[in-house]
Image (tube, rainbow, N blue to C red; front, side, top):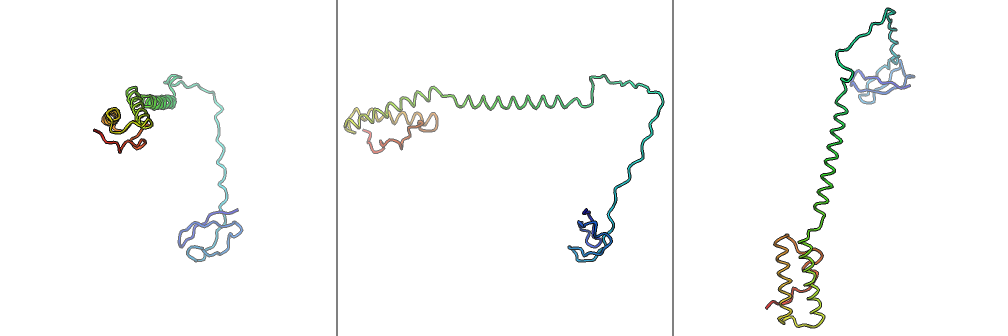
Length: 172
């Protein structure tokens, strides 16, 4: 069975087999010879304790049976569970609050979508781009983009300016 020996020269710990006990071997680190000592045997068992055979006396504690030394572990666990529950409810509440649709944004986006559809219908119907009717709808489309961008810092969702090719239309 292997055991550990310390080299007296370089103080490195070496693992040697008990069959090499009493033999001279070379240290793999410093290459100096060392004699492997006999393995250390197990420590003897401690002596048995003697017990008194006299009468047993009952000792009374000054603490009540409800006062134990390990009382904080249950309270700590309760506080940890409560903190986790509060954290989870805050995360779920924040997710619900920020994920719900804003009715104002939905209204502006719906109006923006209607104006875009009307511009598409006018292009398909062949309405000239320089006509008063086309320019009125096109101005409303630009006003909605500016209003939405100023209020929310972005263009309306799903309907970005690049999605529709109205950039070449002149406004009169």
